[in-house]
Length: 244
Image (cartoon, rainbow, N blue to C red; front, side, top):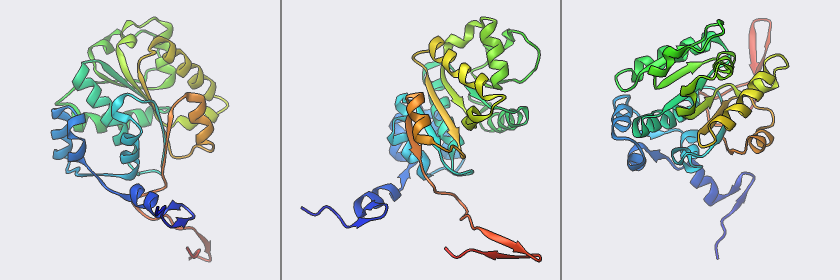
């Protein structure tokens, strides 16, 4: 039996499988038709490595995932695939949690531009402690951890209708000032919505295996990036790059 030539990264067959492209049309049957057509409109035909791995790990089958890949590698689309597909298929809600108001505003504008013709998108970043009942009318809600914590403490009823939670920049768990709030928030959400899917995104998790184990989620890890990262030293206005 030919087991393949061994390499530092694994067998030749494993490397070929990891680099094999996944075309959007190959997962057409897993996507709501409107979502599929919207992605085609965005000229998305090939899925990036982290998106391929996430789908193979059960992204579109409601599996909880920790996605740890470099900046601009396609983590946001991983979340979009799960959120939009679930909203369009089931009519339930999705919540996208970001640690900073500026990031929440950025994602709100991005998602509104891409998907406002398909779903109703809302945002909640106010520091005012209230139940923000107006959010019940929205299907995708972008929010900060502190605001979501406030909604839970006010007994906001629509939270039980959320089917997908995305915790972006999940490495905030290591922040001594804001990490505990996010940790408690995740624990409460799992109790309130035990059937919901949880996606955790980050480019800078120091111990992804340990975090995925604690969160009881599958780990998606990849080092592909759209632009090669080079390291160097700036000396007298000249950069000396390290050899690969």
